[in-house]
Length: 450
Image (cartoon, rainbow, N blue to C red; front, side, top):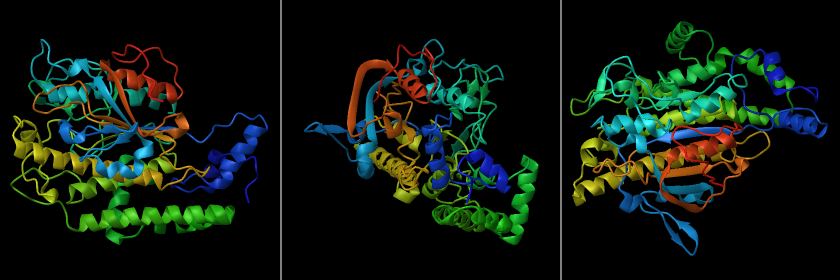
C-alpha cells in the first residue's frame, strides 16, 4: 500500500504509466486525513462544461412548466426526467451582442461568437478577427498547472478557421465558442479517436499520429501496449483501488472497441447532405462517443474545463436517424408552418436525449469520495438563438445541470428579469470555480443560480 501522506500527483509520477488514471478512494482518504491535519491539500475538484446546440428550439414544446411548485418537463425535454433533481432551467437570459446592429446580417455567427464571451464580434471575413476571451478559458487559466490539459474543446463539425461563412463574418466566429483572447479561437476537435489519443496517448502530434497508424495495423488496445505498467499500478494499490481501476480500464476498452468498429466502415458518402466529419456514421453515436471520452477526461482529472459544440449555429444537418430528412437550418425558418415546427421539436428531442446520455455518463462515474461526477460538474446546455425563424437572442433556452458540490440546486425553473445578460450567469459560475472577478463580458452583475 501507499504511504498515507502521498499525493495523487506524486503517485501518478511514481507509476510511470503513460495513461491517465481515475481518482482512487485511498488517495482521497489521504486528502481528507491531510486536511484534518491542517495540510493545504486540494479537495475533490469542481469542473465546468458548456454544451452548445444550434439554431434555437421550438419553445412551445421545449419550455418547462411548474406544477405545485415543482419543475415540470415539456415534450422535447422529457428524456431529462431521471435527472430532474439536478436540473435548473434559466429563462430570460439574453445575448445583446448577438442581435443585428449596424453590422447587419450574421445572426448565426454572432450567436456562436457571443455565447461564451458576452462580446460583439468585429465583422470581417479576413484575418483581423476580434471578439473576447470566453468564460471557459478564464477558468481554464486558473487550473492550467493542475491538470494535464488546460481545457478540452469538442465538436461534431469540421474546423473552419479561415474564410467567410455568414453574411461577411469569418468562419472562426461560427465554428468556435472557446476563445483564449480577443484574436485567438480555441479550435475544437471532432474526431473521437484524436480526442482519445490526446488524453491517453503520449508525445507530439506527429508521434500520436504514428502511434495511431501502428495501433490500426496491429489492432491492439492501448491497454495492451501498457500491460506491464498496468500490472505495476495494480501491485501498488489495495483491493478497493484495484476494483476501481478494473472498472475504469473496462470503460476504456469499450470506447476503443466502439471507435474501431466505427472506423471499419469508413466515412459515409451521401450526395444528399454533407457527411459528418467524425468517425461514426451515426450522428447520435458520434455525439455519445465524444461525450464518453469527455466524461473520462473529467474522471481522470485530465482537465476541469470543457466545451462541446454539438453543431455550429446555422448547421443544415439532416437527421435521417429520426426520420427528419430536411436540413436543420432550413427548418428553423419555419414561418410558423406546423409541419416544420413538428420536425424542429423532433430535433430538439434528439438533442435533449444526447444531453441526457452525457448527464448519465457523469452520474454513473464516481469521484474518489464516492459522489457522482455530475455533483462536482457544472454543465450548461443551450443555444445562442431562441427561435430560429425570428433569429432572436433573448429568452434563450438554457439549462444548468449538476454542480451540487458547488452549491447548485435542481428541480427549479429560474425566471430572471427580461434582457438579463447571459454573461451574468457566466460570472456566477466563474466565481463558483474559485475566481473572484468583478465583471465578465457585458455582465451587469452576478446571477446567483444557487
